[in-house]
Image 1 (cartoon, one colour):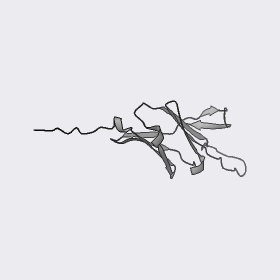
Image 2: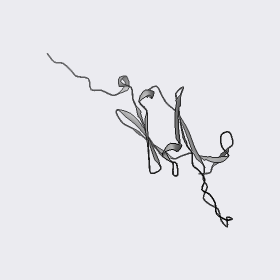
Image 3: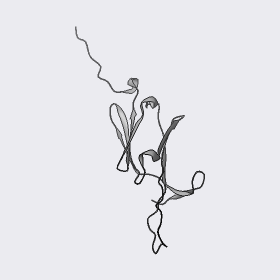
Amino acid sequence: MAPREDTRVRNVPEFTPAVDIYDHDEEIVVVADMPGVPGDGVDIDFDRGELTIRGHVTPPDSEGEYVLEEYQVGDFVRTFTLADSIDPSGISAELKSGVLTLRLPKPSERKPRKIPVKSG
């Protein structure tokens, strides 16, 4: 995963976090890898059908001069376009051990339901 340079906000590389997306009867669950992002370093915005996840990582203080540098630190950014099948007022998020879990509830009119059949 190569970083893309983005100087619009901060002068650090931006990475696209890997995600898994699960569709359940009641909700869509998005799980994103965001290593090194602290709980207060996550911004989640929903605007006009787009959900944007941002994770800010503070680069470590380097001691001395690098002899070899392979590990890159940067921010994570990913945007999703959501269908009308999501209730934006119920979106919730949890960050635990570098893994962000978003729960996107489906509106009640979009949830599958069993239709009872009356016999008579």
